[in-house]
Length: 365
Image 1 (cartoon, rainbow, N blue to C red):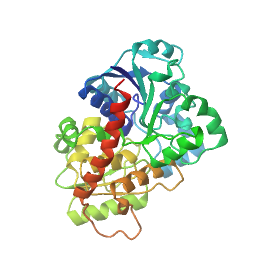
Image 2 (cartoon, rainbow, N blue to C red):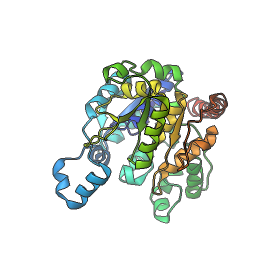
Image 3 (spheres, rainbow, N blue to C red):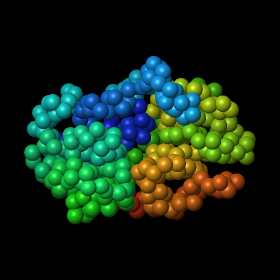
Image 4 (cartoon, rainbow, N blue to C red):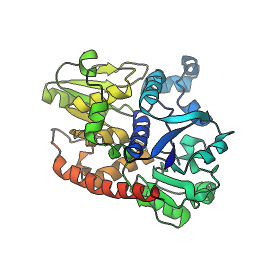
């Protein structure tokens, strides 16, 4: 079966690009001709275009830069190299003006994972609802995410007519099951993020383990990967590093260096994997930071973000599924508590069986 995958792949987000690789690679491994449709969304282009310094002439933006270190360096070249080397892309690129021409090229379209149905990220781009595909039987979603846990009337009216046309839908958050049901009145499957479709050994073999020496990391280290910097997160990371007699390594492309830690800029996806694989401990407030900590069987703690978003919900949903609700970073965390990965891995395996069964069903016709 020839399968076209539609997701967020032209990005400098590690989780987004690695889940893209994982779904396409898994479908290849089980015998399908799968490729990622090289669709270019104007909204996403703007979202992943790095900031220019002249933007910070605005006092409000300058305040955000100083308080939140909000300006990023451009790391797109490393991500494009990963795509070209490891991900099979369609032999042409598409825009909203000509995506209709892709319909005849595939037996099945799969949208997902990531927040493809989050209107704030996609800019209400209906391409991610497969509005260009006339044959509803060719539509499916794997581990799609709405990025919300409450449905507004406006949101429901925007996407309902497109969602109900999907004969097969799965989402990556339990809260997403409720959102889908509230909008359509139908049920859908809860499945694991595509990153879990690939074995730990596969990820380890893909990782760049030389990154430790090349980036001059000495001995044990606590790895920080975060969406938003916070004093509590860094203070805890430093405390853990002191306990293990190691250093704090911080993956980021922010403009300003963080003091007192080993800052790593322009990290490649392969290096990112290598840093997770070789870390002694991980501190994160990123969903995929949690995902790959679990895949690599690392001791980790998760900080919830200080505002109401679907980010927190998808992290807490995942922790509940794998039985690691106690990994939330609290004010009274004082010591390192190791994770029982025998129990955790068994839970992942059980949930993964449901995910693989779903993929088998939608690709068997």
